[in-house]
Length: 304
Image 1 (cartoon, rainbow, N blue to C red):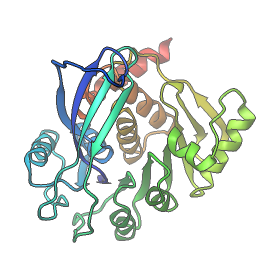
Image 2 (tube, rainbow, N blue to C red):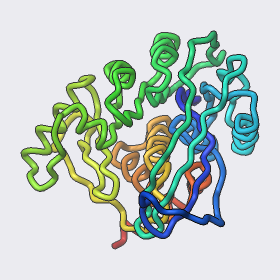
Image 3 (cartoon, rainbow, N blue to C red):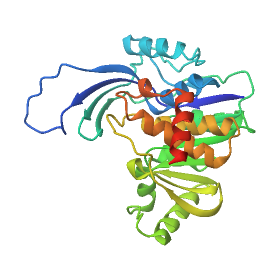
Image 4 (cartoon, rainbow, N blue to C red):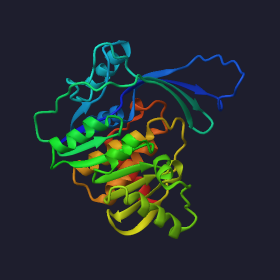
């Protein structure tokens, strides 16, 4: 069982604040947290940390931030020896301001416009591919290279590149932002008939299995993948400190569960709990919980 993750890596600088950012105000900040980030990076780190053989294809430059990101990947054993690193490329980085009152964050990402460069694929059988839509050409080529692999997309926003990839996958795991961008309207959780109709529209993007994540409102899914009623699963109750990376962690856990052939409802529960636990800690990659911790918290939740 091997997993290939294709997507974005960033170096995150997280700054906690006592409330939301306010214009025309001076802030004196004494605390920050630095570490790995980005949807592809975080998902790959989680899969390797949880024991899966994991390969990452992402643009990480040979600079200070890039060297730091490579170093972090060594600990869980992510195979990142063939990262996309064109000459002179500057690694993406983000300033993330977190509201300590509710855990919400504001992200300011600095990223070069990528130029296509040559790449290779792992010389081994891949069972699951996760794309976050940021490398559409590479993602679609990977689907061709490994025709038997299960294909999953982390659909964060309804950009054309992400939609291109989403049309070709087996599992479309969509954020609320992506779903509402496709629908052209807000998801209405007050009426099962409405959100069932909306869910079907998202399924129609690719004709396969869909999940819509809704932050602290939980998620929408079908218990038996493409069959059965659409279910609204509430979020697990936690005290949020920093929501950065929660979606990435959900996707990483989802990939891990699918790769390990877990029952589908268990995949959903595992992913939701991993994401919930992550918001209790500041940072994104650094907030990825241990697998044993997630199973323990799930057992506790099931007893309530």
